[in-house]
Image (cartoon, rainbow, N blue to C red; front, side, top):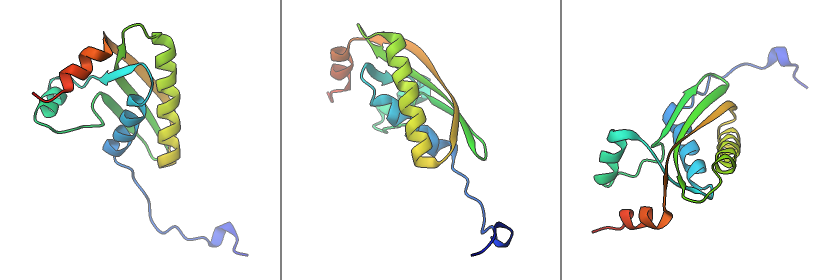
Length: 127
């Protein structure tokens, strides 16, 4: 049995911020009551050009073993905002920790709007 002093480090693993943001954005979008993510003008232009960006509306700070995440969402009209936000926090934390092994120290949810789900679906239909 090798003791811990004999174990050699092979190298390090660094997970890119974009990878963590993509995982977090996908996890947030799966929560009932979330109809979209807000990403600002650049994200909106990219979507108009047909580029699907799962990290849209997500900002992350990744350290060696920890991550802090900000998620900007649009909530479905009629949904209980505190409940949706809490579910987003839990889902994002769980997904990021399971997939990356990073400890998520905080998930800040910013509700940037309220929309009717039907209106969002119609806006996404190709013309």
